[in-house]
Length: 347
Image (cartoon, rainbow, N blue to C red; front, side):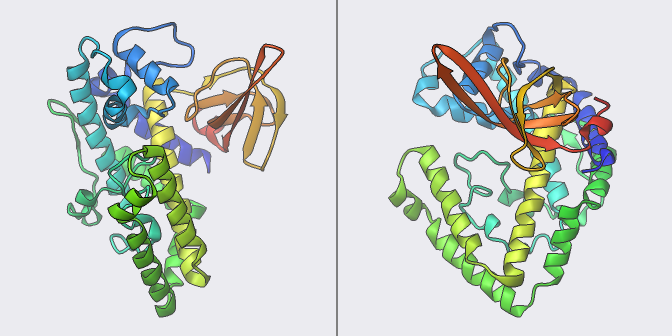
């Protein structure tokens, strides 16, 4: 990505940060260097430690999901929790609507014939999932016909996101992922469309509630695993232009999710990635991936600045491995290098 792209992402986050409602919600987000906390912040810290990734602009649904689990359901609500959760819900709905408007500008929307958007995938399910889903109700709003993004309504406050959202969309349209998807869509012929239709019908059957229940009736992680496996199987069965179209959509969708979930969300909460200083045993599994040892705890899904001249950009941590030898604990992190963020975010 170019520095201008990441600058546009930061512009979106900055606009979110102007909201007093957003500030009240994200003020409870524990950072990685915070002292032991109490109240709502402590609850969020414990939920994150339990393996649930917390995204600053959609905390409401994630916390509500955590509270349905047996371990959390018995804990008393912290002081002020109900009001905080109500505000978080307004922030999340506005955030999802902003993302929905950008998605509605994707070429071909709403007739996107991709397996990813079949009912019941990890991208559409209303059950547990770690991704930002495509909601059915957003299709009814005909956002593709609106040249200006909707105003974010937060009960007693509104945020005009139109300018930074359109600036981000302009940069997004310049990316390889957007251009590749546009070209793949233009390459679809009748045979490819028929192939996608058959694949989507098979996937729809495989993801019926009864089919998911047959695989796993209760455990959310296992149900999520089944959804992912069925989608992967469907994508592997495609060939030619149909495969190119579906693969290009997956890349584009992932990039949009990354920009909003980890870029806008993280910057809205913490302003800039934290400089973690020197790292040890630096490795590059691929050209855009980095692996290293570090003594501090760094949460997955977080953005951190690695000042080593071989990296010199923000890194999105997606994996941590803990090794214990002779009672000595070693933390190895792996993440994606977000090329262009050093210049775009003035790190």
